[in-house]
Image 1 (cartoon, helix red, strand yellow):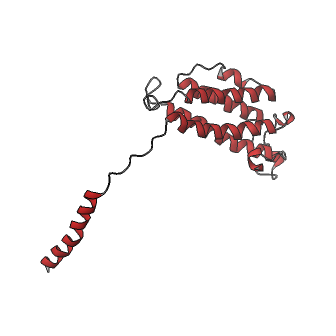
Image 2 (cartoon, one colour; image 1 turned 60 degrees about the vertical axis):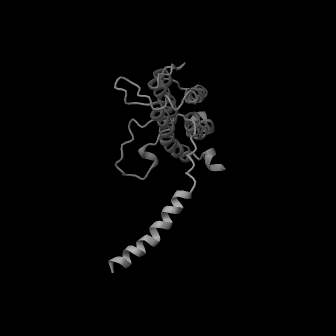
Image 3 (tube, one colour; image 1 turned 90 degrees about the vertical axis):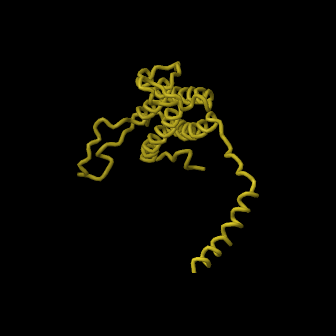
Length: 191
């Protein structure tokens, strides 16, 4: 019985070894430059957020959800909820903070962006923050994208660039609701 098993095992093992020896070596995975890899998600976030910021009428930039627009007696406190304009300012300001964490000198102070009030100023700050992010990402290489940054060397360019994209989309989900509460269909949903 043991001889049969050994014979059977060798019948499968020997041809497998021969095939493995004659197979061409696997092709190496295609490497994508970090600058290209991070540019795309930021561009997607930019397109969604900026198009919605442009679509919302200026008179609605002070809109924030409040208890009186929902079902009565919900018991939910909306005190301190950001307005649509404050959400836009927060996204732009945060983009600049992530850029500063990467060591990028930005033309705008994140705190000053939070004080902007007009739609045109806020949309411009938003566009400028994404342009600065794209410029920063264009400098990413395989040698520097995972370099430790900050006092404890725990942040990386990759992490901060990813944060620009995910943080933008997190707040995009909120401003989409603000827009829809005001009868505005987000441009990204119109396609």
